Image: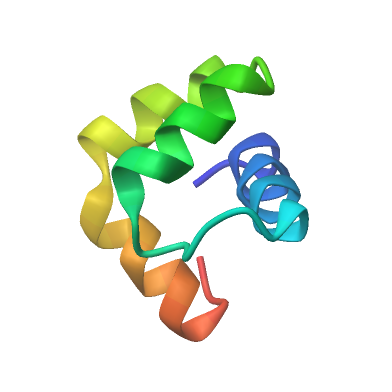
Length: 58
């Protein structure tokens, strides 16, 4: 996970608009925020994303 992706995840989280385990909604919010890298990342790296959400570790 790159620093850019991590910052985008945290920016989506900070909106408070969704549960971060609701990946389709996270993707929609990321798309609306023009975080296209995050949308793609979530398609290809769900396990790593879940690990980051649960532990804060990359």
